[in-house]
Length: 131
Image 1: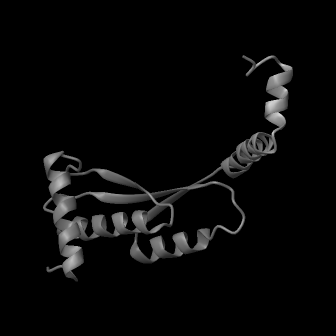
Image 2: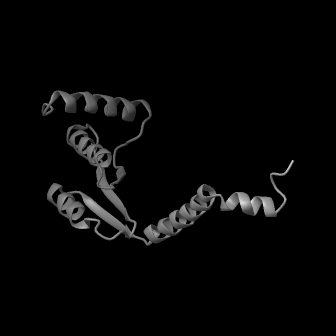
């Protein structure tokens, strides 16, 4: 079975070398792949699937997605693509997006204070920054 392109061949050789040198996958392993939906994670799971089919050992792939809770994230695309390719998919639903937004809001407020000079006034009132 040959690879579908020169690019696939180059990537497969590099991934195979890493797997072999570091003994990353053994017979019977279930390999978990963090699947965000971005190009990198799609490329990784796809090349691992190509290698899984060609490998002299038996291993399976399990895609895992951490749902950060952002509105508009298209979970259906992940679900449909994984199902079409026969990949097991686990989605862990969280509200981490809210936490991230809170942290960013606090960071933005602090940056606004620094940029507006209010922090300098606060530091001066506290006796900081005086020679």
